[in-house]
Amino acid sequence: MELSKRQQQIIEIVKSKGPITGENIAEKLNLTRATLRPDLAILTMSGILEARPRVGYYYTNKSQNKIITEELSKYIVKDYASHPIIIKNGVSIYDAICTIFMEDVSTLFIINNKGDFVGVCSRKDLLRASMMGEDIHTTPVDIIMTRMPNLSYVTTQDKVITAAQLMIEKEIDSLPIVQHKQTGTVEIKGRISKTTITKLFVSLFKE
Image (tube, rainbow, N blue to C red; front, side):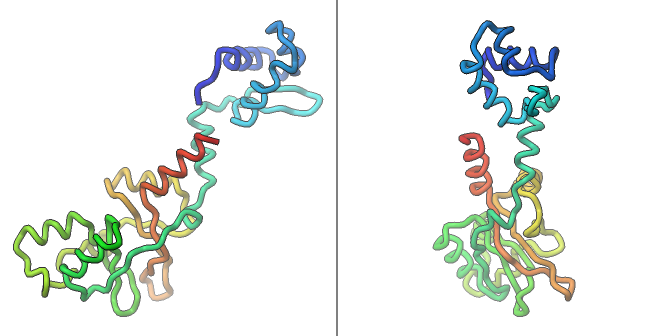
């Protein structure tokens, strides 16, 4: 958020004189209280200033980056989950290629006959297999998938910011959302993608 010159002046006044009433801030700027009301509302809602009844405004000592981080930490993965595209581990590479393009996704999540999450296959994996001369009609996707435990994932209760950081670290476009089973394995409950997170970030800045 880019602050106006007047908002920056208000912050400096509150830093040095706070707690201070809105009337006193207006007096120092030679403005009316009504003129300052929108600026004070913006600074309060953004978390830079805090207002206390019968006391006045005071500076929270939070940077804008810290305020944004605190806001993002409120959002939980389960609330931004989308439908995962799942295939069985015996499916051929050819069928996997057909599925990934028909569903228009970047990643397929692979399960075994028990419903356990066992692997991930990306567009790059499928392209590499087709270029290396694999018999894509008969070779199962198991051969080229990335297997557990070498997989990154999040749980339904993880924070969205955690998912974003993991995607950046691993340089991937989406993550499976899993739930741990009593058997020690995990099952797929959804997916979260860069696109979903980007939409969330944009909506927050619009607000």
